[in-house]
Amino acid sequence: MTDDGLSRRRLIGASGTAAVAGVVAGASGAGALALRGDAVSRGDGAAAAGATPSTTASALALDAAIPFRGAHQAGIVTPAQDRLHFVALDVVTTDRDQLRQLLEDWTRAAERMTAGAEAAPGGLVGGGPNRAPEDTGEAYGLPASGLTITIGYGPSLFDDRFGLAAKRPAALQELPPFTGDQLDPRRSGGDLCIQACANDPQVAVHAVRNLVRLGFGVVAVRWSQLGFGRTSSTSTAQATPRNMFGFKDGTNNLKAEEPEGLAQHVWVGDSDETGAAAWMAGGSYLVARRIRMHIEVWDRTSLQEQEDVIGRDKKEGAPLGATKEFDTPDFAKKGPDGAPAIPVTAHVRLAHESRLGGIRLLRRGYNFTDGSDGVGHLDAGLFFLAYMRNPGKQFVPMQRALAKADGLNEYIEHNGSAVFACPPGLKDGEHWGQALFA
Ligand SMILES: C=CC1=C(C)c2cc3[nH]c(cc4nc(cc5[nH]c(cc1n2)c(C)c5CCC(=O)O)C(CCC(=O)O)=C4C)c(C)c3C=C
Ligand SMILES: [Fe+2]
Image (cartoon, rainbow, N blue to C red; front, side, top):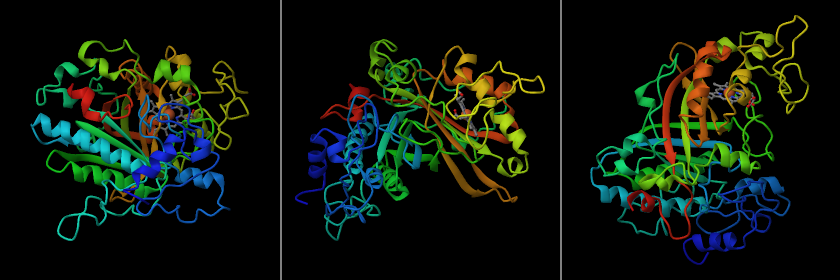
């Protein structure tokens, strides 16, 4: 490697096509996986460990770098990676310039890390023996691993501390309380969030750790969540994964290959926000809910009851009354007993767009298991992440409908909640602080 590891990545990006470079197609658009890979590894530029000519195309694609810049931020329609490290932060300084500078520094480090480089040039040891290294080192030598870093701003960032009140998008409102919520303030809210997703947990954790390190004295971690086994597919190229209840999750999700659906339901439109808040055009709102799943209770529940609660069969994932996963649910169909084949309290009936005036979301959640609760139960569940154009018009009515009647409520508990405005993607030369502090 000639310089700091980033130029090689730039060359790859400049080649333009994922098929040549192994770069997963755009931060901005359709996210089909590359057919051939050219893994980028931190540090010495060597190919990723084990990337021999016989390595399969899909394995290489999992190592590949995803473009950081584009019309939209990476990590939203990007085919969901396997691992997540999510962190919510509070700003601890009152100095507006420090916050602006941090957003600029974060942009530089995030772009480097998503390219498979160290957080700063020579970050591992280049600063010499007398300074703390500028990269913590645990991802040195690892490939880019599909890392995406997505930033979001919470409603509280737009209070009177930094002169940002006029910049607050109208759609960025605190979520209302929902029936059954058992929210823990220590797992809720935040001035800022960073969602780091990668196919290697060490790469995702390294990214968050290094951004938090850069922010020392300016921001402090409020809460964080690790996730594994994505619980949604966000591309038709991906098989539908399973959640901790053992059901396929993400079948009827919005997918990267539906640009019209994304424009309608995910991306903030050019005229959605006006005046000083117009910076959100091309961005998206993120709702995060930590949902504990009472798996011990579920595991003692009959298969029939489990399927009735979800409204789909467990093995294939087909809507009840149908046979294939992607069959259209028929909510009018009756079972042999004359009752609706998909019960009136079934999760998929209540969350379906046909029941909610056409509302849809892009779900991008992850499973979690955070040890046990001290009384013999696993603290496991779904870290629900969903991107949308307007939370008040999408998540709020959907969650109200679910909170009221969903059969799933007997088995779950929402104990963390936050909402963030995720700005649009960056053009060359731009950084995160610019639009916010213009
Ligand atoms: C407010 C939005 C939603 C919350 C909260 C939520 C929690 C949640 N979901 C599952 C399991 C499944 N959900 C499925 C479908 C589904 N869920 C939502 C929304 C929320 N889920 C939507 C919009 C849909 C799609 C409905 C449709 O159009 O058919 C499914 C079925 C497979 C699928 O389509 O993804 C499962 C399984 C759990 C366990 C959970 C909380 C822990
Ligand atoms: Fe769901």
